[in-house]
Length: 72
Image (cartoon, rainbow, N blue to C red; front, side, top):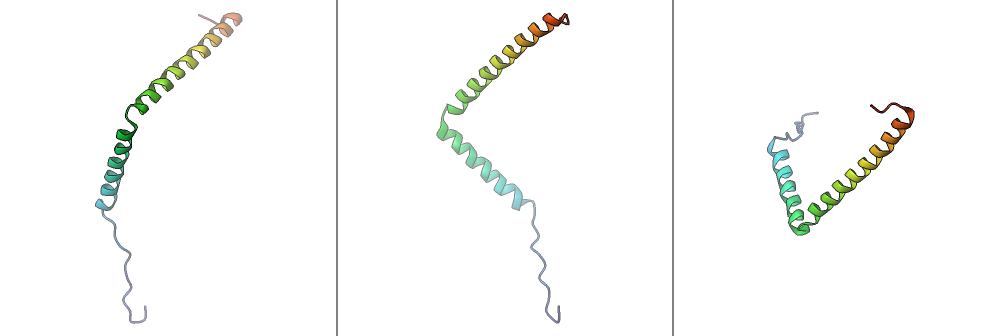
């Protein structure tokens, strides 16, 4: 250090994390306002698509189990 005082690193406090996080969340909700009902429609379509896929797999597994005689 040779006669000079060493600078300590800046200490972060909780507000340095919480406030930017809150601002980001507010900003992201602004995107939902712009998108209107599109996210709702996307979740509905994905949900029904997932259910249809799951039922198709279940039918396949039931047929396989019935053929092997393991269906209860």
